[in-house]
Length: 107
Image (tube, rainbow, N blue to C red; front, side, top):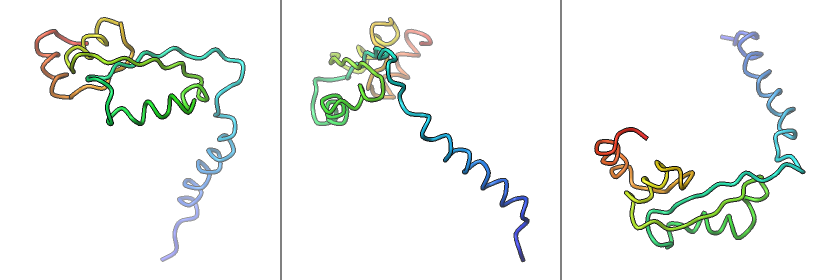
């Protein structure tokens, strides 16, 4: 049974539009880098390797991000830093986040 040509068109047109727009989605030169503070939930070890490697190779800067990192004393501390605004993002345990939400309220 042949496919409906309209259904094929609905799949091809968005793909073509995405391919044509892709070159224009890169980081814009001359735009100031966005500052981003990231907290790890423990001292830096092997689990932080992707972040440290990306930072050392300049991958964040290439995307217009000025990323700074620090280590918290644990997941609760990392979550508290995000909740207080001292950090933009944190790597933390989901169970600690649930406990924090139950005791401290919503973020």
